Image (tube, rainbow, N blue to C red):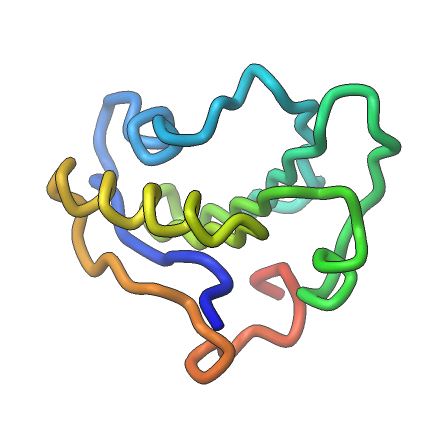
Length: 117
């Protein structure tokens, strides 16, 4: 089963993160930004209770719809509950020319926590 995508964006000036998330209507969601040096953003439907999700299992049980992890300004991991949106994010990243775009699946997901530490 698809969990999300991972990719690399250029480590240079630009709005690359906005480009990655173009298929996802970010204005329909409230955003929670985790307090780490490597940032974790989560998207909740407007007016939903916001909680910090630490594992993929907690993500699945929560109202959170998307988790975005950014490492060293270039390495992105996006978890999403909506399979169509995962495909849209993937195809958008390919069209935009981002590098190393791959699906994250049950078989290849190495993370035990939704964090880099």
